Image (cartoon, rainbow, N blue to C red; front, side, top):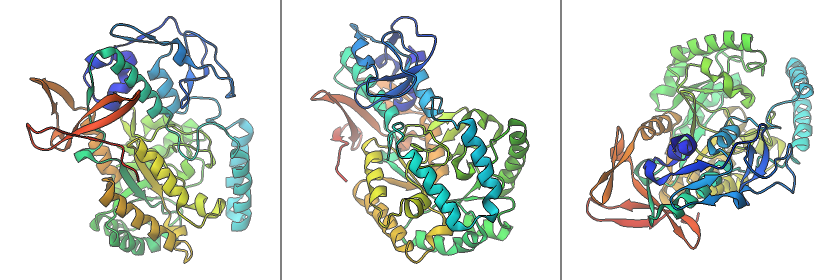
Length: 461
């Protein structure tokens, strides 16, 4: 039933016959929080049990109400609805209250006259209030992955098959993908971009530069050409970085029109909102191929929430590339860290789910003599991961292109085997999900035609 299995099919690109899901009874009128196993807090409607308006220690676990038939999995909730609620931040706590919204407007009104130390103190105070938030999980939330894996495991149990074929998540069998982005926020940062490109190039890494098109600094054709000619990428960052893009719908539409014009003039296909303020339901007004504005877990960001996934996903026609690691400013200036250990931990957690590792490192801040060595340490670590763990270090537009190609690929039977068809299939890899000691394990086929070699995808970092 594609209506219920749509998010699994989107994730795995496996044959429909393996995803036979049905709904157990009528769903409740109102949504609420519930548990789905030990690793997934969900928000949505259910047909059994009880739902909570807030997260607490007594959330009802719906796994006990799943019915496994002879060939189907009968679920007491709609996984499409639940995962949409997470990825589009449609759950309590993901939106600012009226008081927080007014406080934010006051902060941005006063920001031009506030001393840097005063701004940092305000930000640290806000950060302290959010550290106690229980959901989404931090430093990485993998709820969507956990839901999909649990349902796929159940589908495998009732299918009668020993394994389920699917199209591997990344081209040529990469274990995961890594994106580096450099938000340019000031004239000083703009002037440091050339040197930052030299540093990235010395480690064999290309990055995207989200540019603020108005007010912050001048943007010359020569500056943009320098970025493009060196194989880096240009994205649009907001309009003027005043924090008010999504305040009012009518104002947003006027600004979106100007933003779209800058995108065409700059040849930019990617967008990022200033300070990661966002409203996914308004994205239909933006003429971009991909967006990079939604954090995986926004516990330390000005706008709370988070999409709770480490994978790309579509919002209408726009592909969302979630921000899955802590921003450099938060790490160094607000948390006061002077190491990359948090980044390493986040990378490990993301790659355990074969996900997308996305960094925001500002040229405005990382040029500091104390912070630059830490950034170079990160680049060196990523380069080693590329060599030893098989990650795909690439640009946002390349992930965008791959994910769109993969979303149209199909697995078709070829005798006793499976063949991948569709544009880009030459880079795609056939993989399998199977159960080992009660747990879901991924394997992929390698080698030439007629020679099958399966390798388990659980190497240690």
